[in-house]
Image (cartoon, rainbow, N blue to C red; front, side, top):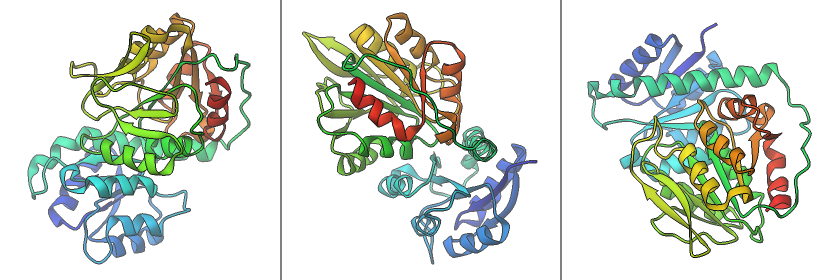
Length: 337
């Protein structure tokens, strides 16, 4: 059965183009909605798997829709909006439960919307399939393998679809006394990471900042990679520093692989890589680099993932990664770091 999608946008042209792109990607667009009020009515009537949601709309905006959906497991919401216009709104939308963002290439009614076709179809498909997998496989306790307490000098986290919520839950559960600094990579459109880091900083006991060139990493601190640039960690006279790189590497900038490889080189066996919810396999090469220097790995268990893609490929690679449900990862980080 094809995933069922509701397209919400106040532009009739955008609704038509987005619906066409999704149908061409083998998705069932069950309806479109012109504003938030129309969207909520059609969600109640049609029960779609996924909603693509514009943020700036009359009558009831996208944030109003997300607030109205709070506490509901379905539908999963993907924001389709302009990053240059809606950066703060996008960060708030992620905080309210949207699982991912797709940036429109233009605010104008234009065929340039077709540029996001592949990304949009992939993210909507992953969101729908992830929901169905979670519904088919109820959560079960996952045993935690023994690990030496206090043996970590750097925690590195990689995530994609569903990552903003996962990072929020994890960061807010960690104490300011965490000894090892944290470096994070999230696949997200350019323009959103500064606002997201600021929101995480307000919600967390840790000091959370967007990465900048030469930034020194310290205990009680978490650094979020800047969208559009790789984050590498290097040791400089005994201190760990963030460095930003622009060289292409696969599909993603920033790349989880790039972060993990650099951290493995910087701290060796005292590195810890954590792979949270997300589609694709970014992080697998980096996880191999961590395993090669006898560092440690944690993957989010399927039971708590929005999309069990990135964690699955690391588990299947047989690298000795410990699989832990998201709600238990903070406690494990405290024990190890």
